[in-house]
Image (cartoon, rainbow, N blue to C red):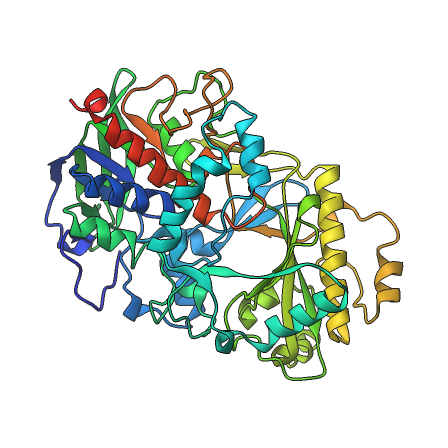
Length: 514
């Protein structure tokens, strides 16, 4: 349940404001208020439709954000940010669960879908989704979310060292573009931006939707999408408990239902509600951009927490499916990935202010699956294949080379049982032989693909405009749509597709209105 210290905006209802069961009618009900859900809601409300948004998480305004990491994990993340895709190796992942969704807790990186990815999708029965066709939508996203480069004064020493290492190696490097306005570089992105500079859905599309008359119910878990036969008719949800008693019920009747809970929650909700894809692909085709983290310890004081969360990316190896970046983490999260204990851990963490935390993001070469287990909920499985493992090991090697070139005296690798390295020669010797997949320490924040789009209902779950094959009045608007991995941060792709698909829904509204 929310603990709100500021006035709740008009049109937003939290659990504490609900005295009893509610029943409402609207044109469209959107499940989820993240990148896809909030953008869809704002676009449809702007077009004159009566829109209701239902969000499982609470409403937490900008004024409530701080660097209290445990509090942020409890209030802004699902399951405290500690979820796992099961496999060898397991992949830790996290999902936002609050008004604004994962945009509230992401790093704010905003990149267009690479042309090579759009061209690949266009060759997979998505002929309308080309770089040229998506250009105006990317432009709208970037204007609306204030996407642009960082002020140089907001870039910290950790990012500058990372840049120096890449440049000494002669590698292509880009300055990040981020959805931010006057970011001061306080590096609290993952816990909710305390200044409002990060233009998350919380401070952009959610207020825009509300100002156009949309209603948003927070603290409410959607139990199922209601239907008559194959036609979606609304949702049934329940607010969080009060005083130990079950919360009030919410019933929404609508002509159109939009599932926008993300690549894990959306397919789970659809299956729980009795919808089945003719393709049999709902919940399959999961990609997640495996990430691995490398830590460099320097002689100089770095204070990685001083400066923007991530300022640069190495794009030299993007054609190999590998992207490198430095992104500071607080001490508690640094220790989670370390094999050290007791005095040894204390001595290592005494060097925290001399650390640069960096890592590699790898474009998937395999897929996983989201299953629904009665009494348990969604269970995510993902088995890294040989090519993916090779890319991860290469990404780890390249990240370590960057830190060593920047002057790191000690480098800690995300490999079980691996010793520290202090030179390129030691690194080469350590990684000269094979690395077992089970020894890799991986994580992800980019889950995609579990309701893939395509025009052939035998191969895809939804159309290129997000409409569920085999159902009426049912759409998907999140990263579930992606036919495959995008290889870069996916937020801008999600928002651009949401705007495009909402525009199409408005243009064909008579076909859906009841």
